Length: 571
Image 1 (cartoon, rainbow, N blue to C red):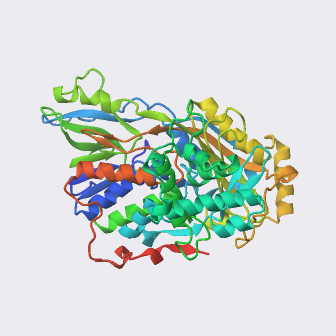
Image 2: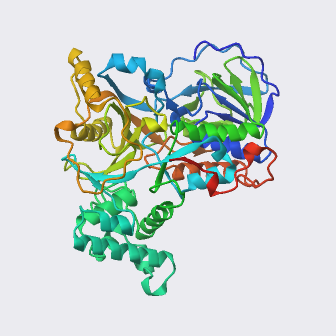
Image 3: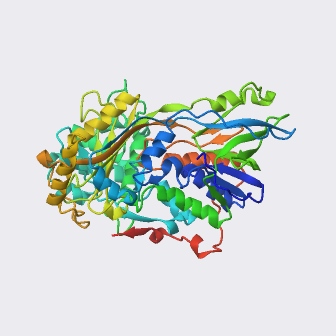
């Protein structure tokens, strides 16, 4: 980033909006503003799209994490202070990742295939077939730039390595051999009640009092056994914290929200003909979503410049109002509005005082907006966790791995048929909310130790991997293999051997809306709905009179996405 390529000057030099960073919220806002006929300049210091929402080659991921884990270097000397009209504020970066641990157990094999990986920085993530992300992709025409594949199944795991299938329909409940007859009847009756409530049937309507009560209390009232409650709370409603321990639960799920999540899950199953379950994953990784909205913005006239750091902000000396940015190339660009990636913070050059209007605002904007942390892990293996399945989600409810586990842990296995890794390999994404680095590592290691064989880092590692490769035939499992619902799977001695892993903790920061606006970091949710809500809120704040993605007649075939059938799903 120190060697700035010799870019020609950007022309024009004045825009309605400048967006710095091509993460998902920034890309959505850029596309929405461009669609609303705003002139937009979209900059990114990285040579790729997506920022903290990107999918990166194996060789590039460690350097990206490392770059964003250290305090910023001293600001470079300023070539000129600006005109008499402007004060100059430094734009520096803040460390957003910590406790980074990269382990390589098969360097020769991975070096040969390094560029064949597309690893999600913010995994695990997936789309519900009926969630806000899919609706936005369809309504904006971004579906023209993406392809998806169905996630085969969802499982609930335990500390013995068992993976229990989560039944998501009446047919699945009847076929599931891990459920007893009484459990099947209880689950069927509960789903019938929920479906009747959603359909507006008066005789099965859930009372307002129950809807405002904790969801776990409602499930207890329904007499559901612990295993069924765990399935519903953590594998379908996707609760993050232990719902039965109010002392540690930071987000107690209300019945209304739980029912809404069940409705989303139910509406997602069967929405698309080629989708076997409720979840989808984009081919080439989650970074494709940011790129799709960037392409949508470009079609509407947004100008893109990558590899271009922004070093300073220009503010009016008298009013303290934002006026523009100074690029690393030395050029000043002006705009009415500015959106910042969460990487950046605004600081005052040493020894200078801000204009009076900024004296109260600047400390607030520059402070660390820390909302907690999320531990993330990426593992690469040569064999699937389940021999008959390639792509699936595993949820570890609170207390399922060890007594102190207060949060859910999610694992998403993705195979080479989604173009995220070489043929015959699998990528596992793991995440869990945590309070600190030590707790985060303990949560991720608990899953790894349960499901994987972690070899010592020595010369014998490659031999173990080569042996496993020979046994597996170095081939992806049958993509069309039917989901097994025969009950628990016991990996035992057949646990996949770890080839490579990256463990790191990420700060959870919310966006800020002030004299300068910033976007949030990736959150701990499985889907993108909360991030999309944040992007919409930010857009409405800066453009209260404009419609978010107004419907217009198609002027370009690329713009024209006109229905559910336009979601491209590979079988």
